[in-house]
Image (tube, rainbow, N blue to C red):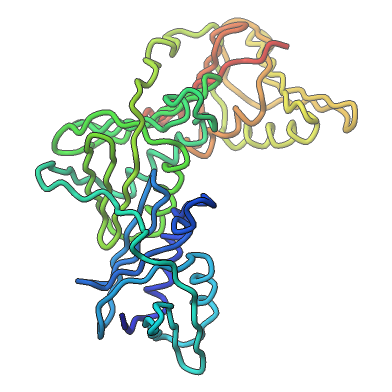
Length: 367
């Protein structure tokens, strides 16, 4: 194998692929990336549950394959100052990296051991959606996913691609976030559950590429996304996402409309004084036109802040975890928010005043 390639092109491909590599000591080849120059230059990585391949423009002088440890290759390429790099294999199968004034030899692992990524099924039609809109939908909900896969449906991001819209949702049973992206695709793809760790990698990859659109295919066990020179494959979860529509309250005992920035600053201060518990008490008294928050810690002290809000309904004192309230605010695109309180022990719902595409539900704390 021998190719000449621009440093920035191969480095981006290696950095994208490095995040997908596995960490299983019993399979050291999973910590490697495969550089394949048989037909075109392609960089591949997989952890057996997800995989990525990136096409790299390069001049191929000799065809071949080589598998090397991703982290070492990334550090080596990053340290090279030249614009063009030559990659070639030695007689004993190792990788030689050459550039102006530098030469590095990297130990290779037999590429025959490298797992094969699932192949594209030409019989399955894909749909094309806007990359930025699809990315924004996942980013708006992913933080509400459970970090545990004990219940796979809660440890996954739900994506529903329909003709009218793309709906993304996530829940860890204590809170729920839903984002609707108008437009959707030309046809229904169906409902998809992507495990959190793979959804995070998918977000990283979609952030790195510049294509305006992505092509999505849904096969029996895999989600296949292609955009320009990048293809990402992830196993999907065979489970049913909760029917969350039924738990979103239609009416509220108390409602408040306030500036998102004011609420964020209130929570930021409350976080300082809440100690390890990270509890904040919200106190809404429509009769006295008061919307306030309190937090208390034996080590730090206590705070009580009141902000301007248009409020109606019943008086209420209720406690929440600060992180659960603050996490959703960056996903709301409007400057003002509405908060609907279902009552003591019942969920609260946060929406943007001019952003009907996002809904966030959070359960109160028993305290």
